[in-house]
Image (cartoon, rainbow over all chains, first blue to last red; front, side, top):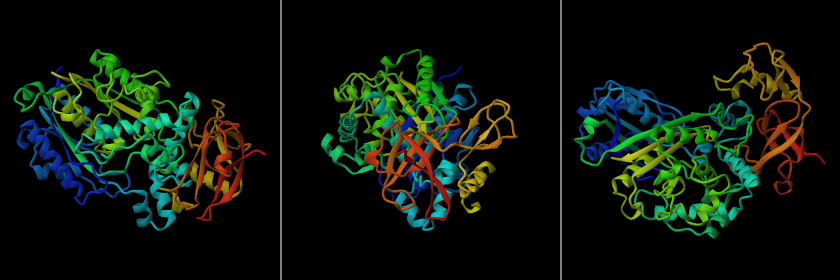
Length: 394
Length: 130
């Protein structure tokens, strides 16, 4: 089987609200990724994208229109939807075509443009319309209870985790402080001002136990990656990054599971274990990782499911500085979802961007010394499913 | 009720909310595997049995987790939300909790109550057993 490598990455700034159209944001990131790879549109023979947002009218034939615009002729074309994990899974499906030898050079991109709760309420003054919107996301039984975002679900996951593992609020609040320090050195990041543990604990309570500064924002942004066969990668401008191992796992649930423990994320553990085995490594071999983590509490829980720390130990590891740049397990060096920003469909490709830059040694002040093995993890729903890529500088 | 349903949802949800209007809190039982599950379904996921029996639940349970929503759509501030592990079936319900957030504890016994939402529909909520 052939090997697939990432040879180019691009991303826009991550912003609260872009004046640009999703299509234009996508073009910006695609242009960067192609230049970074040193390939032209005529060399692309596979193209993939995701939807644009969860609560927006996004139209159809997104990828076909982009291919027409870029004048790409391809042997593989798809739009993939699996919630927040979509663009990482799309990268995998393209890489699989390359490994099979059908495609030589693939382009995957995602542009995310979302409505926040205030915008939704303005657009849907009638509560019945809001319930219908919520219905299509969260199902009939939950939507009537005013679920407009997964915030309440996540709050209860974190409450159970804190209850079962005896985690203190100031331990959760220590994570956003580290992520801000990382983001301070990332010009793409949405929030770069330092915060203290006290700032986090004194910030507005959104849904207890989640404080404002422990929550991701709803952001706009786009990202793209070029993935190629080894033959094409030899001619690339920059050091190719091997897609070394992959894992993917989905629980039989959508948002709130009707049975089972909501303080555990089995799909994260399963996908990580599969990816480590596929790459022939263990969690301890990873030099840095980008973890999806939409809320501080669930990010800590994912650190544990990924095998970096034992159950209940991630809050202590973060307090001890082990996940900082310079620590033994640097995680979310980009600033993560909390400080880089979170544009869900594009987020996995933001993560790929960070890990590729780190493995090439191009992360500037955020650089993890000697990084050669990196991890990217993405999830969907209430962490109902997860995908993990292990990447290596070759 | 039809105005609330998006197309892909199953008919069991329609019946569930219709039963709530009559103050009946229902689950479905499969005579083939003997399981009763909430929320109600039109087909048993284990034995694919399509003839399920509707049964009324006792309306008691245990508070599994809870939070408050400040941006809920019903503009009741704050809305106390919870997950209740239900007696008499497999499964648990996302619901509203009729109680002060500060007074709630994981594991406390709760019981069913009904209320009329701002949309005029009857919904379930649970309150601590006093």
